[in-house]
Length: 88
Image 1 (cartoon, rainbow, N blue to C red):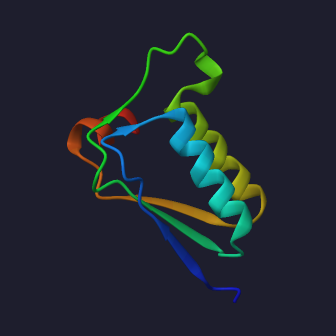
Image 2: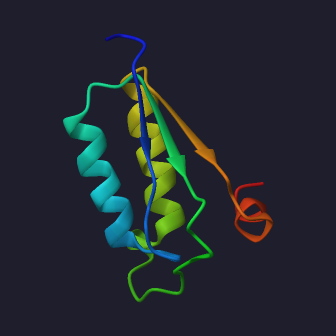
């Protein structure tokens, strides 16, 4: 429905570019207007990649922008304080 919500929970302790790409695939296949990404299992973001365009933070921001252009919304929840600081 137009107000549907999908909740996605990465299972790994490290959030990698591959995990973000899997989330993107799930979101594309869902018609949900709101996307919640639950970080309860995530302890760290993998960064320092040789490929800056594939950094998890950048991919999350790109995903958020994509959803906004589709008039959809992404919410991150259960962020550890160390990870939340990255988004401030």
